[in-house]
Image (cartoon, rainbow, N blue to C red; front, side):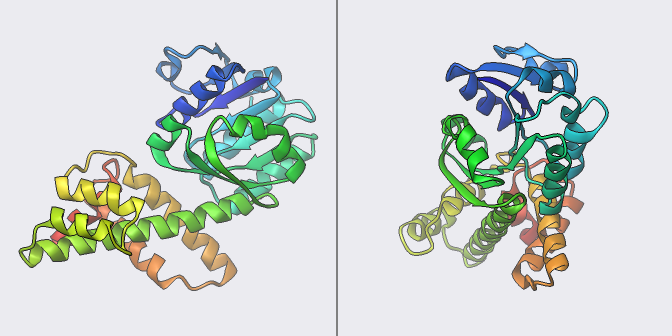
Length: 284
């Protein structure tokens, strides 16, 4: 297929490369010219030009406003994509934003799936992402062969926006687990116990998790270089709390973790790893 890709960052670049390796013709657009260096792809001047070339376009960019601008703005995808083509947005954005973009595209016969992904940069490299999909089931089946190039678990959650709701739930649980791991490591150190041994013991029991394995190890090694930039989790938690406020749902644990993320950002650690939540505790 002729596939477009916008968002060639830590996750997007390996995702685009997987699609190319699978034999699909790849078209790309990027704000920064260096992002496309070394890619076996046709470089387009605007999202609209990219849209004119492609049956399916993937986006994975930072914010709701970014996705809306690329999809609906001047020289955006809506000006180039043909009726029957599909936008697959793998970004993490507000459910309402996903619904709005899908509605606007739908007015021109363009389909949209909100398909946020979980698994981080390594999951993107290994093509083992979890993909949570909102949109029409028949549209998902049309593009499923492409998603199979990117992930191991592809779940249709419901209509447009539902994928983003599922991703919000994912982020709530994951970052709360990072905070719990940070508190455990802080307690172990304060008690004079070997944090590495505590982490090893916990990993073999009911507290074991991928978060503990990856983030706990970063805390033990005090390696706070970015695996996942904390600013992205801070952004995601803002989306979660906004959705909760809109729905009238109390999220007391999430609200506390959000304050810890605020404290992390205040220290200027937004581009460090979210395991830096341990450093926030150490300041108290």
